Structures are given as C-alpha cells and as structure tokens.
Image (spheres, rainbow over the protein chains, first blue to last red):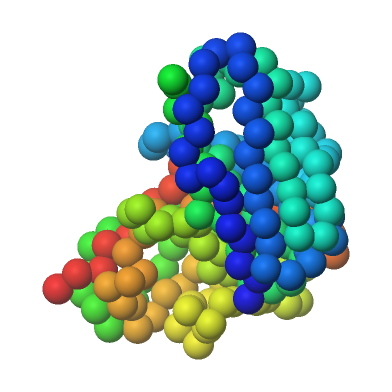
Length: 107
Length: 122
C-alpha cells in the first residue's frame, strides 16, 4: 500500500498570504495525485487531479505541481474561505490512499 | 447538476449487516466508475470500494475484503454497499463518490454525497 505523508500538519497563515502544502509518497505515483479541500461537516471537494489539473470551478489561485514522490499544493493569495483541511490522494495503485491531512488555519 | 444521496446508515451491533444505497442524478450514470469512501472520527479518508462503469470489476482494500460488496444498478442509477460482519472499527461516515474520469479511467473523486453515518456498537 502506498503511504502518503503530508506536511506540515498545521499551517497558520493570514489572508492574502501564500500557502504551500506538501505531500510525499512512499513510492512513485507518477502524476496520479489529487488534492481535496474539506470543511467541517462537509464532504471533500476535488481541487486538483493528476498533479496539476484544476477541477471544474476551482479558482486559479489553487495550483499543483510535482511528480514521482513529491507534490505541492500552492494557494496564492489566501481567501478567508480557504481555511480548511486539505488532503492528497493517489490513484497510481490499488488501494487508493489518502494523506493524513494538513489543517490550514487563520493566524 | 450532479447529485448523490446516500441512505441506509444507522446503529448496528458487531457481526450484523447493513446495506447502504446511493441514488444518483444529473449525469450519465453508466459512464463512470463509482466509489465508497469512509471517514472515521479523527482518521484519514479511506477508499473502501470501487466499481467500474459497467460493473464488470470491483476492488476492495484488505480492511473490508470478503465482508463488503459494492454493486450498481445502471437502469435505476443506484449504487449499493453491502456490509457484512461489521466491526466496531467500521464506524464512520460513508460517502458515495462519482469518479472524475469516464469509462475505464478512474481514481479521482469529483462529486460526493453528503455522507451517511454508520455506527457499529453493542
């Protein structure tokens, strides 16, 4: 099973700042990595698929990069609505696995 | 718009069974792989089952293999999850999810239901 490790566990930033979230895979997942945002009491929302492709309706301030084992989600110019939990997920091998999440909180 | 509505959750004793349903609308149901994903309190998301667009294959992680069965009715646009021999560690919110990709490409969760809570407790 491919293990995804996200860092940091918690990221404290102010609105307008730039957020950089990391996800590392225990083995190569090529570019088969996605990012999700989850708010309390809600289902996750797909942000990025296949490392760098924004899902439908996702603002341009969200961008993804990386390949192999190291990936980054960047949020440029944080909006108050962006403070939430973020997960990465791989589809390179079964079972599909998720990271443990990064909590983005308001500083 | 895409809608996924789960039902069937509740409180059940260890060892018993439960069947979840997910009614779908707003898209061509038979074109997409479908998934069940669960989230236990304080734990990471876990994919527990996927079924291909045509129902010809499915996959399960070891944690539920042999106990859970995913199925779909493409004529009624409904997804199911039959859960047998339930354990306390199966307690979670269960989401159905539609894949982002169509047909034989799958593995990103583009649309989610609101989730249904399954509590396994004596």
